[in-house]
Each structure stands twice: as structure tokens, then as C-alpha cells.
Amino acid sequence: MEEHRVSVDGTSHPLPRPFLVIATQNPIEMEGTYPLPEAQRDRFLLRISMGYPQAEAEVAMLDRHGDADPLDPLRPVADAATVMRTIESVRRVFVHPAVKEYLVAILHQTRTLPQTRLGASPRAGLQLLRAARARAAMDGRTYVVPDDVAELAGPALAHRVLLSSQAQLAGQSALDLVQAAVRAVPVPAGRR
Image 1: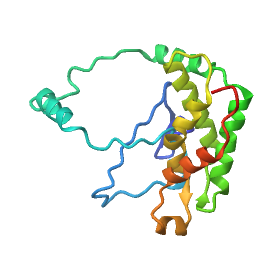
Image 2: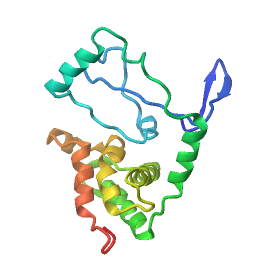
Image 3: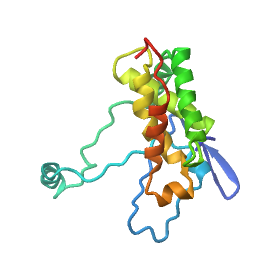
């Protein structure tokens, strides 16, 4: 993924930009599937849990898609060049040094909590920064605020953090640890 290429029978093929991988994980009936190693999980920007839809939404889904393929009416809303321009504009979203220090302090906190076997990597910090920039841009801002970092810390870091055996036995989750790390780090003053 990081290399933006695939290899087949020893031949490497570059992939066109933009390049995106979306993966699903179903924790039920995992026979024949294996958890990703930490190094591979670390390459995913975010991990979100969808859960089940509300009953009304499920009924609406049945009404809309029960007798047709839901993908049939889909049409492109942007071309590759537009997506690349959007990516470039998000890269220019300003991040104050104090917000970067806040982000790094959260990463460091995940590495020092006693319940952590493996904390968030430097790559995790880069991905959290990218996600925070995208959130700011989607909110119509040209700058990142600490809340962008704090609110995306769970989806950006929890799948990268490994718990100690004691934390697992105590029923804690990686998300619990990330949230504890965020709470433990002071928010930069005057930049909320």
C-alpha cells in the first residue's frame, strides 16, 4: 500500500494516483482469514466501527435495495484529477506548531501507558495529522484545531496500539487507552 504498487509473479506494477484501499473486517466467521500484522494495520489511515443501522434505516435499505443492485445507479462525482487537486489543497491546511506538539504528546502518551505493549508509531502520527487536516478542510477551515486531533485520535490510533496482557485481562480496549492518552495530554491554551 505504502509503495503504491502491486507485484505479481515477481513483476512490479505501479498503481495510478489517486490510490485508495478500503477494507472491511467482519469479526464473525473469520475462518480462512487472519488478523493483519501490526506493520500492515499501521498503513491504514483510520479504522471505524459501523455497528448495526437503526431499525428505520434498515427498513429504508430494504425498500431501496431489496429488488435492485444498490451499485447500479452510482455515478462518478469527481474524476482523478479533481481528487488529486483536493488532496493537494488538504496538504496545505495550516497546523500550528503547538497543535503538532499536542499530537506528538498524545502519541508519546500511548507509548508510556503501563497498559500498552506497543504504542502509536511515527507513521500513526503522520496519518493522524493528515486526517486532522482533512477534517478541518471538510469543516471549511484552513487550519487544524486541537479538537480535530483529539476527535480523530481514536479512529487513527486505536488499531495501531497493542494492549498488555494485563489490560486485555482487565477488559480494556485499545480505544480506551487512546482516549486515556488524549485525556492525559493538556490541550494547547488559546488554540481550541
